[in-house]
Image (cartoon, rainbow, N blue to C red; front, side, top):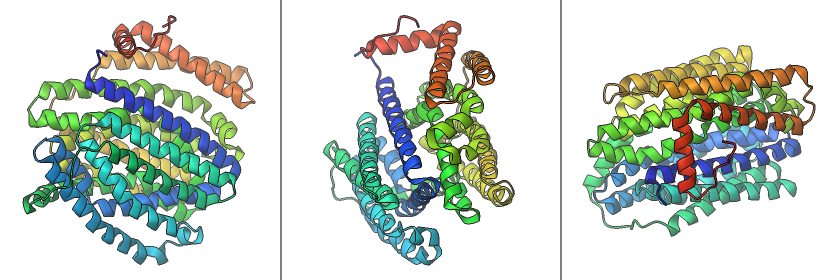
Length: 481
């Protein structure tokens, strides 16, 4: 196939992300109708606590290992050093979890503590093999194994919920997925465990400190709102909020793909001082990330409440006001994710940390101020403000290293096409009663078709590039496009 490695890996990542999101949507719809908001909220709290204590177990060394392995010098030694550190840090994370058990009443009361402990132990195997693959540049295989992890996890969870295991079925399925993903990674891993030196540990440590602090700040964005909603409100409110957040994830397909694919590439280009490649690829990543984020935001504003009601149930429609701001969060995330990724890849983890910690502190302060007053809508506003601060800061700091470029003409075309789609959706929304999930989904599909058709007519460069990529991959290009 006449396809570059970045295009090929991006396509694999996008397809994997879309597939995982669809599986996640379908499974969450089933869980929402079978269990309701409160058990889902308990599971989302499990994910939040796992993310927090798993970060303690990683200590930032995972990102450092990817960086050092991707540079191509002594990769086996750096991989081996990371495995040693990861096993040692497991003791710290497990000790911290056991110590914190009395304070995690929502975890112990819902029966997720045992599964949380088991997930932390299993994650050592899955993370070590995954980091080895990712750092080696095998992004496509890494994404396939991630898909296997999530897909099997969902199958386990659906079966367990069907047989009445409730929250335990959701958490147990999560652990099963970790095991499956780790095995898939191990089969494709070329790195070997070898003797390493103290210098390798020092090299990882010098980079991991700032990665750990930056990841800690990022973790605030991911889970502070979840934990604080659970503190101030109830598990049911957590379930409603996180379900609304999941609905916005359709906007992140390409952003996550470019973030995953470009990190090792930019790391390599940075070491080789290939600045032009970095600037060009980052500008294109911004464009294609907004390709989905902009229409998803506009379409979600118009049809979001109907989607929540018909997909998940009447109780989840309460998340419509939070959904409005969470859709904007995903647009801002394009610049935050890619900006901080590029800073870390270019060996500037300290810069990424400082801007992230400022935004994280702002997020917590706004959460404490707004959640008691506005509930889950306050949490969404707090996240939006913090993400905006992080995105602006990341781009400002990055502009001191490279030239930040935007493809303004393409973005303008996307806004125009999304506006045409929005006019159609508003007309349908006010003229025809959308009283069934099939009607809502049909309108969404037609609206997406309008957006794509108008955009391709306005922007022949995007049209031609996607058409060529499709043909190179052997995928037939629709004649109407």
